Length: 376
Ligand code: PEP
Ligand code: MG
Image 1 (cartoon, rainbow, N blue to C red):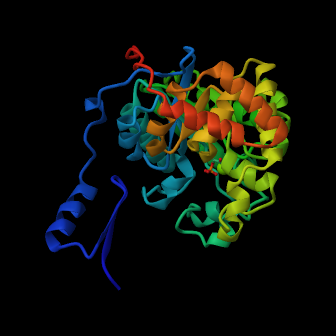
Image 2 (cartoon, rainbow, N blue to C red):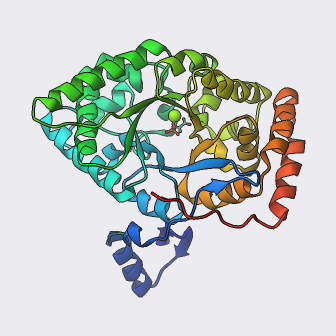
């Protein structure tokens, strides 16, 4: 029965705040964030041997971009657009009004991050969520949340093209006003799904052209969250501009363990040898078609796993913005030649002790001097 304030920006929990504190924090919550442009940029994260590693942010709302910029994100690697349903007052998911409202939100995101790119993931909803207009987090009972092995993500978009078309047109509309944007397709299993979305994107472009608009070409990427998709990453690479491994779902489907069930937390958060094998395979399969592959699941926000993934050939990551500072430290203290050796051994044996030891040792060394500030 005690009043508490959770300050998500600073990570504070204030128990029984005084009236003055409550008022001050309440005011801050309602105030627009400080203009992101006032935050001085940092150069790209570079390993000791000079390899550039891309560090993007995962965001749930446009407002999170202020934190992403404060943490010097190279871009937004994952904007979970389905969470717009939880409070941005979208007038439905289909039709011209929804298209206008969505375009406005995407435009705000692109401008807030410009000139750095924003990767918008198309709605990752299941049928029930799309019908009720409620997104997974908060609104959904725990056990229902990830039960979804049916019409979800791109599968739902294919079975309800109006849903997909409205969102694709909204993204293209927003992209027309400048800034960099990419589209990421969730829960992909097979190449025909990407071919379908690419075809709808082309139709959306033509529809806007009839209004005299000229949307730029927007890169289309596939999320690898279904084990079958990860195992056949080379096939998806043929029909995608980029690939993004979503380890949160990949782990739960690989291990057949619900990621929201606390009783399975040690299984889900542990690193199974099967996961290591798969993560070793994906960058190699993507490389066959020279398609960039990023990891946007939260696994990358663990220092050991970040180092391991770099050693396995991943050069792009996207994570919760508050983990970006740690990630930069790991990158800047790493030597890729060494990481390659330890990561390969770890993936082969399933044992992480070597790589854990390596990361601890590397982090204990003085950091390399900051790289020069990148030109936009
Ligand atoms: C993932 O599955 O790893 C992912 C990044 O998407 P989400 O966490 O939204 O399911
Ligand atoms: Mg996912």
